[in-house]
Image (cartoon, rainbow, N blue to C red; front, side, top):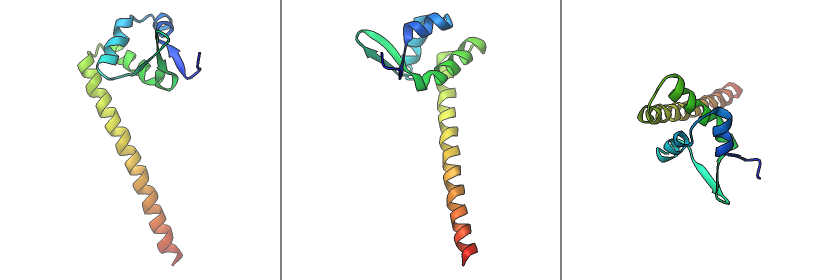
Length: 101
């Protein structure tokens, strides 16, 4: 099997999580699963997101609607952080150009 994917069945067994939880996350669009040869997988690079959602749900007892809201807010924060970095880089270039004049 491709190393980029982790079996949902194996993930559920390893983390002692019901498949229905993963299915619910997929229905809400919080994670995306891939079906290969009748088996369902998640991309390895998305495991961190899945584990974060698991902790929020099971440790803090946040329901699917709450997970969806939190996920949307985290995506917005990440986008804003990227925008800040881009603006800081532009400002630094501008300052460097003016300094060299």
